[in-house]
Length: 361
Image (cartoon, rainbow, N blue to C red; front, side, top):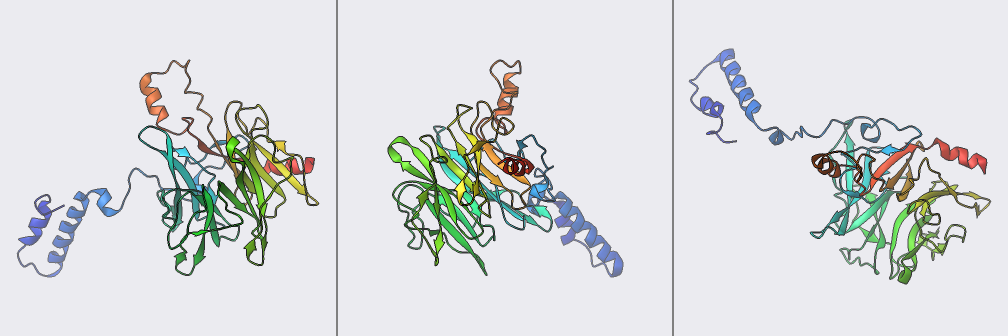
């Protein structure tokens, strides 16, 4: 705002030489008048973004019925394309969304961040530590020292992809995060590797192609030996079937594994859990209709660092958006530009039932 737009500036220019307290008082009043006229955005304030305090972006914790996580903030009209991954201290959360091109087809994916500073959560924005063009599925290691993610980009500083989507990571340093580093072989190959999740001892689980010609993915495991990841091995046949099995989440102590599978005809992908007992994985159990929708796809499971909540992605449609509804066109238009539009949202639910499933085994 210039002086022509605000008469308070001109009044300051032509003040006669006042002295003492009266002069100071008049100048303060003029400055206050100027600030009151300044647009809020010039003051670094976003009046349309809510003040969010407390853990998990200040959202009311869910019960035993899944509900959309942070509607309009994390879960939006966009295609949410990963679980939310929280730093161990709970002050940062990363998730990704997929954007579409002019033809409406899925295009690039980007990691998004929100941070809690001085007790208040910042407005979500693109994750500044990763500048690759196309990246997704960021995951904090349990100690918070690394973030793994997938990307189909070539990279920078001599880092090059090995084909398709690769697994990358950044590492915390004294000055922030390092530049992205490709995990290289034998983890990455000419096909797709994505959806990394790691244990306390840095054992790696991820999704990878079994048969690129049939678009069949499976879940792989790679252990870290003397600072180098070993050749990934497919998990056993009761986990990796002839159907699509992918998007794993491994418990930090490697005691259980959550993943999405198309092995049943309930919807187009359900969440399953398998427990590790004496180095053997139990037969996976469907998490049931309380978690999995009858006609939706559930994937990207994730349990919060404190073990309290299960997060997952679902493309279930808001029941109020249906072809036989009597709502107006305006209602549909407004509703489809929000979460619940079937493009994928992030849900969360109390994770206590997972312990009950373990006891049943």
